[in-house]
Image 1 (tube, rainbow, N blue to C red):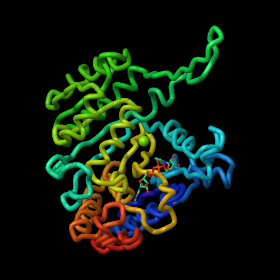
Image 2 (cartoon, rainbow, N blue to C red; image 1 turned 90 degrees about the horizontal axis):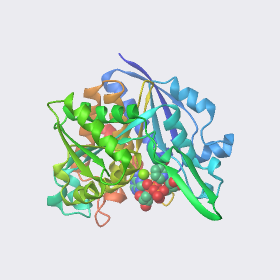
Image 3 (cartoon, rainbow, N blue to C red; image 1 turned 180 degrees about the vertical axis):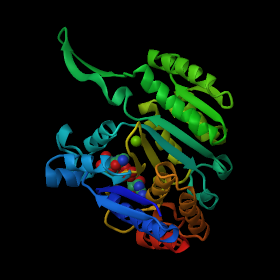
Length: 357
Ligand code: NAI
Ligand code: MG
């Protein structure tokens, strides 16, 4: 019997609804496979600002660091949109990534046969697409300094800085190769090496790392072309690896392949401490509190946690299989339902998954 301590940070909006669903599914897994999951809860985002005056209270961070893994719902909402920068919910997200050294964000994009008609793309284009975006998460433009406006010779100028250490690039690219070894042995390294010096170094490091993985094929692709190829012919990809901002943009684009943001899970791996798992969607204020949210991205994120943090492969498979079965049986939350047919609520969807575990 395994014992695991899981920090749950539901956050705001539908984050709360989907996190609750994922915890219920994990409890069902615990019962079936005889594991003891202990859940501890913390504040992050807007609710943390309201109650503690900060988007990431120290107690939350400490609790996460003392757990075996972290499950995060989503943060944000219109209530906090006009707050000053240090009191914005998203600040809590950037801070937890940096503080927990969550350097590698893994976003698997998998096509489900039974959702073929939910994607705006043609079924023959998306059918069988199965790729993994590996996004660097703690460097690049989102963290580089200076990031400021200033006056130069009487003129207003602005600067953001794309800053990486060689070691930071190397470790994310290496992670992508290791993951590719367990998949279809191809890495597409995405950069803008025709323009950016940072990308030229990225490419150089990718070549170096590739020598350690003779069984994995490496290709380079410029980011603008990658954006186009991703929806033109997604089946050509296995693992894509890229820096922070390119990865942010490409992974939202890739969600279109599956039909809904509500289907895409992610893992953010730490250098040494516990890792964090979260759906890629936000707090969806437009549907929050209505029991309408698709809980599958969050439930699939908890499957990634079982596999990657705890090595519980059978248990992760059981969740992923239940998701496939429920979709194949025709159950749909509103975001992926066609013409309002077979629509179920968040809680009904969770019950259907549990019933199959
Ligand atoms: P969003 O991802 O919350 O929603 C975009 C659209 O997709 C909405 O129409 C929403 O209803 C729908 N949607 C998203 N997830 C869904 C699900 N599980 N089931 C059904 N429908 C779903 O992005 P948006 O609207 O741009 O941002 C809303 C708030 O969330 C903002 O405050 C934003 O800053 C925050 N946000 C937080 C993120 C996080 O916590 N990781 C990521 C992205 C946005
Ligand atoms: Mg994004």
